[in-house]
Image (cartoon, rainbow over all chains, first blue to last red):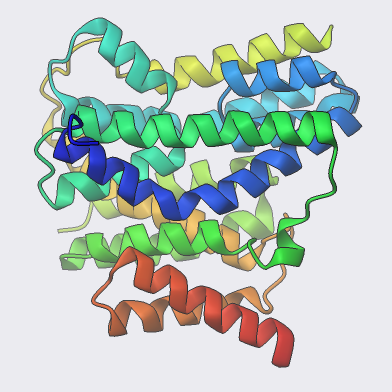
Amino acid sequence: MSGLSASFRRGLRDTLPLVPPLAVFGAVYGTLAVQAGLSPGLTLLSSVIVLSGSAQVAMVGLLAGGPGPVLLATTGLALRHLPMSATLSGFIGHAPWYRRVHLAFVLVDESFGLTVNAVRRGEPDLVAFKTAVDVTLVSTWLASTAAGAWLGGSVEPARLGLDVVFPLFYLALALPLLSDRRRWLTAGLAVAAAVGAVVLLPSAWWVAVAAVVAAAGGSRLR
Amino acid sequence: MSHLAIIVLVALITFLSRASFMLWPPSSPNMKENRFLEVFPVALFVAFAVTGFVAPRGELDLTPTLAAAAGGLAGAAIFRRSIVGIMACGLVIYWVARNYL
């Protein structure tokens, strides 16, 4: 470990609490995908090339309805990546194109959250930090998907009490960012928009719509 | 359409959305975009948290996941907004609420 930069080591350390719940969700996805009719090989391929738990779970849930519902849900879920991509692009500055492709490919919610948190505390080497986060998250996701697909266990996150780990993680990321009145008001708007979205919209659109509506409202506040 | 084709299309949509602003070095965003991007992370994280707490299984279901949210907020007050402190407090309160209330 002594050859690794301090930023890389901090990336590994910050990601470790997410490994157990992510492994459970990966195993659940692998199991669900095989039950929905994907072969274990295609299930693993989907984790390699899609690399998005929410899009993959939506895909296998809607697979029986054909490509239309799957692609519509994927588009709804993917909308949140647009501002995430713009934000991260500003953080990493003028990195080479191949580094940008790699960072874009693994722009997952958890790595974005940890990266924003690292920026806030002044992490000196963001690319090394995010690479460590990505390596940990991707290897966990692939290994657990493969385990679920081939071993076909019946892992149920809610039974283990792990279904609130991800909401708590995002709460923990949001709270340190509430540094001024505008961000507090934006958070209040996001609560209202998220509850409204849950009541009014299909689940694939909840987060993207709530986040964009709240950020648009918050950006207009003084 | 074959399963392989659907997977490839899902991967393509996901990658294009992630790469939308990443493939070229950033230009200077205007003031409006700047103000949006400043508050977007807060909005996104709160949206993820709230939808996870109020609809953990894809439909409105308030108990006992709201206990986890309350525990997380208590953890933030006790542990000065530490990520591990917030998650640990939230999980403990959630398990207590689920098993004993």
